[in-house]
Length: 247
Image 1 (cartoon, one colour):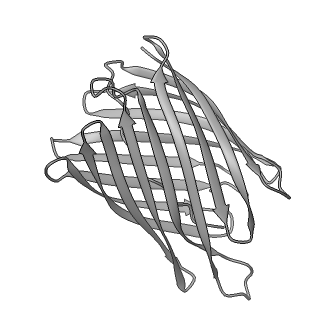
Image 2 (cartoon, rainbow, N blue to C red):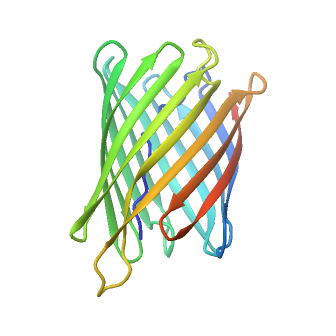
């Protein structure tokens, strides 16, 4: 199994609402040889003054096999400088999705709009475990939020690595729930071809765009598109849409 390059998550927008429910669907189509990947997800969350907690369930199709997973995630703040994120997802009996997927991240406000972040992720698949360590920096600049994140995946006598970039533009500084963001990543991925074969490092790249906006006072929409490529594997393009309600 393979490492995933992931951007650090940004905390949910504080719109004053306490509850949030969301339902979405994502489709990724390969250029050849493989069935489309599909993911359907529903989630519900609650926000306190300094933390949010969200529970979600998803069903996903990979390589023609449907698997289910459930997760819990939280965002929290500790004082004016520190914030964090943690997530645990489980998929009992899964053969393609990770059976356990735990991640955490700490972010510190440094100075003049700058943030420093560090994270760790551990994915337990049916046949191996993958560890990802990451570190990066981010900055608020007017209506923009800019982030750069580097990640490394040690193991099997070699190390995969990657760099991910994010640029998010808010339509209105007073409306953090309306924005457009652009993502891009590149790196080298560790691929295991067999027990008697040395690990292979393959170049990967991805790009995406996402738009989030309220539709009414209580309802909102998120829509996005992605492109992913890897050496010697069919590239894929994807679309994702979700609706959310707050109250």
